[in-house]
Each structure stands twice: as structure tokens, then as C-alpha cells.
Amino acid sequence: MRKTKKTRGRLSAELANALSRLASGGKAVFSVSDFAEAIGRPRNRVWRALTFLVDRGWVARLRKGKYFVVPLEAGPESTWAEDALVVASHLTDRAAAAYWTACHYWNWTEQVPRTVFVQTPRRVRPQEQTILGVQYRIVCLSQPKFFGTVKRTAGRGFFTVTDREKTLVDALDRPELCGGIRQVAEMLPVAAEAVRWDKVDEYLKRMGSGAIYKRLGLLVESRGKKVPVPERKRRLEAWHGRLTGGYASLEPGGLKMGPVNNRWLVRLNVRGIVPEGAAG
Image (cartoon, rainbow, N blue to C red; front, side, top):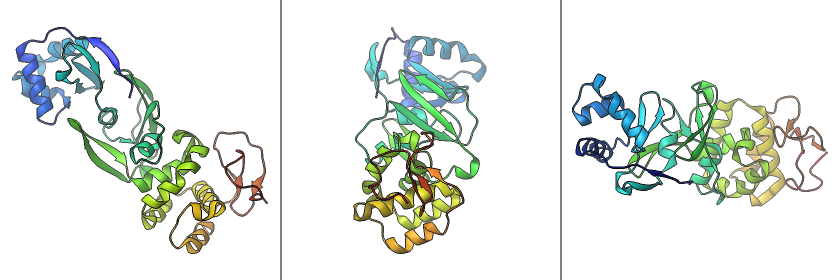
């Protein structure tokens, strides 16, 4: 995670105690009302104190009415290094760390994405934000596609992340948000051993996307035993039965050129992922 250096200066005992109460009480991310209670003032008389804390770097403003306590133990000459997943989960009312960030969280890839990817059914602007030196990309999706999340704890707070099965389905739906289809193909063998495939099948139906079936079926079938899938033959035929018309690009947003796989209706617009001879 990227770090940013900020000189914060001294803090009064009253403010320090208030922030300490919030952090120790599991409210590293807090609301205006939370702060008013911690400092013992009416809600309409805390705005000047909050502005001071934000300006001095003791607190970070995440969005309207939501703030984050920068660790007090770092001292006045601080290097901020709090878990970015906690911040990510509070950038809007309903949000989850997802895509490449979730792939890294579940240990499917050792590559650390420079951007923290956040998934939400809310409309959020701007969709790209930098908070305390960390870059966030907020991906808005339809309400029916926001599901399959779990809550975890980290440091002094909690965060929400897509579960393993939703992370895999999302990676096949939006590989460009997971480092590209080449990265997705590389992590697929590890992911295949980690997920519950009955749950993956359920999630595939809920997503309602033929393109996901096409990419998944092609990658699983062409890579053979490298991608361990229980009841392999049955699943492949079940996925094939749910294909929609038209060809899906193996790499969405890539060039619309290259050979096609007629069984799975996929255009192979990235070389070296599917073995030679898989087209046709």
C-alpha cells in the first residue's frame, strides 16, 4: 500500500481523547454524530473541530458525513499505513472490495494492484479517488449484480469484500478490472481449488451473462486438468447449454480480431492463453 507523509502538529487533550475513544471503540470510521458523542458536544458544534482535524491530517474525510481516524500511535511526524480495505468499504453506503483487490485478498495472485477496486450498486462521483495517497476506483453496477459479499476485520475497523465465488465470477465478467484476461487465466487453477462450485453455478445464473459462461467454459475445457473442476463433464455441458448468441471477446475492450472458438463462441483476441488448435 502506498504511504503518504504528513506533518500533523500537536493535538489538544480533548481532541486526542475523542479520537482515542472512537478508535478503541471500533469506530475508526465514524460519523459526525459519533464524533459529537465522543467529544461530548452537541452535533452542531463539532464542525470546526472536524475541519481542524482534517486540515492537520489527524482525520481523513471519506465522503459527506464519514471520516477516518488516522492512527494516533504514528505520532505528529507520521507515515500513514492503515489498511486501505477499511476505507474502501466506507466510500459509499453499500460497497465491497472487489475485482483485482479481492483476487489479491484471497491469495490468488501475488501481484499487488496499485489501485483498490471497490464495487457498489450506488451511483458515486467521482469514480476515481485518491485518499491519503491511495488510489481507489469505484465500479458501479446494477443492483441484481451486487451480492456475494463477506465482512472481515482489519486493524481497528472492518471491511467488506466479495467472497471467493463472486470474485471468480466478477473476474470472468470484467477481466480488465483484474489485470486482464491473461492474469485471470493464470490465477484460475488456484481459484478453482478454493471455490465451492455449486455456489459458482448459482452465481453464474444470478449474473445472467452469457459471456461469463463462454470465457469460463473455454478456459476450463482448453486447460484440462490444470483447472480442477468437480463433475467436470457435466458442468461443461451445463454451461454450454446456457450460451447466448453471438461471439464474446476473450479480452473485453480488446481488438475485435483474431480466430474464433465456435464451440464456446469466443473470439480469441489475445494470443498465448488458449492452446493452439482451440479455434474452430
